[in-house]
Length: 398
View 1 (cartoon, rainbow, N blue to C red):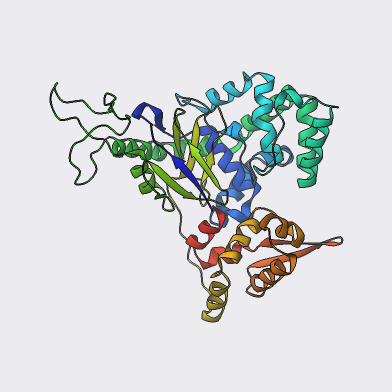
View 2 (view 1 turned 180 degrees about the vertical axis):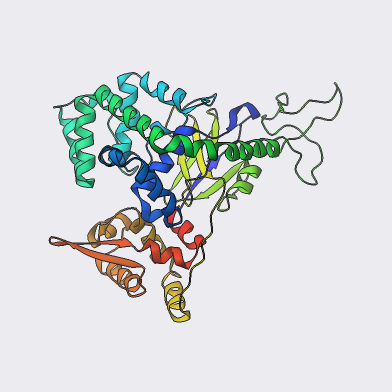
């Protein structure tokens, strides 16, 4: 399963690289909402939670916007990139009501698998709005409540959300950002340097940002008239260098990203924005909602932790992950507790097939099952996966 980015037709002016304070705040809030995804950040999460205990209830209310699914509201929507968190929050505060609804409603539902009605139809009391609220409620009580508040009073909800984000900035993020930002800006400059460099061993050629017959566009000074044009490293080359799971596919400027979703994204004529992050690991986030720019938020750096296992347990657990079907099952189990029947529906498999795969994973200690009334829900044991290695957890979590 993967997302393929078609980068053909992008010029240098269409590609931006830089940190976003709002996106980094969202990644930080995700760590607080889903600590099981980020055992390596347990120390930071404990310190952040202790710095703002009074925020706990409000962060819990809005957690659907940054827990399993990252709301589009928290990513750059156009160029140029904002210079500060205050600037990004001010832009949210200036959004027209329908634009805010359009950006937030999919985040509350929290899945790309179900369509979200256009903002003009999400009016409290209408059949369309009630159906949307019911679908959110089926996913969780918190999502259902947030959906009803959004439709009843979107601007009031926006003001409440902005207050929570500003309070989180004051409580713990501002100090964290002062530490993280310089390294992320250095990383972005290095990426821009790569984009402005000749490919290793390549002969000078036309710019990567042009179509056949068009004049070359370059970030570098061009030679005198009649000279040989300067070549830039293509965005596809740089993207595959930045992202360990990215690979070029087929002809042209196409890059495959290993993700749970299946999609093919034609980027041009929209810009592509690469947002390095210190908190997003092991996730890789791709946002493709029209008409906003395409955004890829990725880990600018990783962390490594040592773990110990017996040889027998290691063998047992690794063997349980050798099946592609069980690996796909693990990806679904990472996001939220799921019943056997829901897993079967998502995967297009029979319940007995899913039960057998779950039993293998549970026997290996990779899945935990809990009873919720008449239902049994299953979830990945991320702490066990973490001890197998960062590569295993990162592969499952993409």
